[in-house]
Length: 172
Image (cartoon, rainbow, N blue to C red; front, side, top):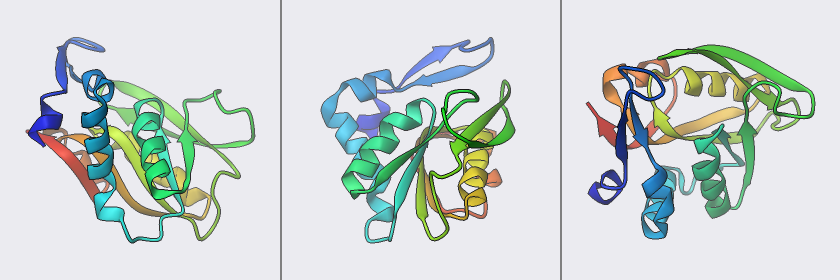
């Protein structure tokens, strides 16, 4: 995991003062490191009956679509309001630096789907919990949540206590 950690840089005071942003751009730029991250994200879920991968806008799209490709299943985008062109379900939630909403197409999933949720970062857990709620609102099951980075000090994992959570890198 040190190879992955070496490709993540800290950007202080972004998006606002006091926040240290974990920038994954160098990681996704390097094909070998990106491949390693994708394979490590999906490892605990191999052999499970995953029927779809969902990812949150925007960096979750990068890892989620690659994991979906590797698993041979479809990808479901969870988007910011107003970005999806069809009927949607919406969940609002709080971030560590504000509040927002996520949307999913009403027909993106169905009862019986077993969905793996992927994102680059677990912070306070608000985005991930809202994503799980969207998935379950459509009658699907959350197989687990996988993240490249987890900011342990923000205790986001606690909000996801009812789900299996897999994170590659931890920052205390």
